Length: 329
Image 1 (cartoon, rainbow, N blue to C red):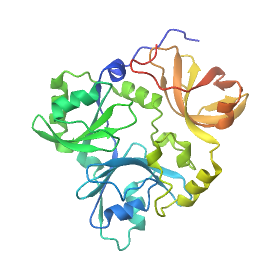
Image 2 (image 1 turned 60 degrees about the horizontal axis):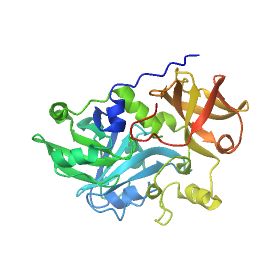
Image 3 (image 1 turned 180 degrees about the vertical axis):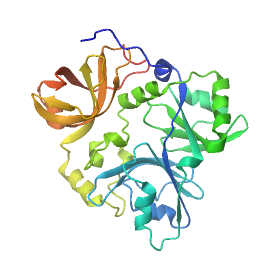
Image 4 (image 1 turned 30 degrees about the horizontal axis):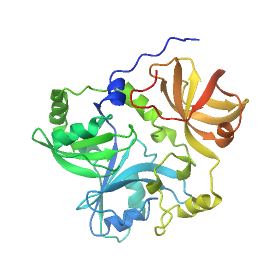
């Protein structure tokens, strides 16, 4: 078994220690505009959207009628309605899902996924860096500001998923090259896809592959305001409320580590004393460590017992803390 620590992927250390930027292709973005846009979309999300002021936003979950997760999204309140950014977490087309229920409401739904380009700026110094270059930095996840990136209009959005300080920089797809040049000219380090994915996994930020069928909102590591227990009715609410009344769920999205530098193949089971306790859905080498990392929705018996955890006959364990600034190893 390999014991030499993995290399740090390009841009990983700056993401953890200072700041870096990268590109985020393939994101799902739906625009909902019109008089009834906010009230309509609010009927399909776990968070409360009705009270959002323009310029604010929130993480939320879209569920089916049985309360199973369809997508995790960052919903932004704009002067025209809502922007629904599901990143790469949408298991279904949110546009089709919402249109299926759209009957007489006064609103329009548009898929803007191909019309926008998204970059990420993340790291402990990212807030101060953006405040200097764009004239301000949003404070809470979902808060968003208009900015000027060297003459190109951009939207700066406070985000989760890449550490405690992370921002999305969104612009029109036709302006992506100009924003890319602006970021390159700034001298900030570029983080490659492997570094971005490693941080995403370490931060337990799921993509669609990490949301198998019948995943429940409370099984995910979400901020408290992503699930409202006081708002009006929404699709899937009965299941979400029943789980809240029970006080716990039997599974939880977890970060799993195992010996050896080769990441486990997605679909590999996590075993607790030889009994299946979860399935690895995303994986990567552990930066700077002789180990590998993976995400899995893990049964609580594996987290609460002294069972021996294994992946591919390798010793495994649950990572209980997120990396501090500077990473591990």
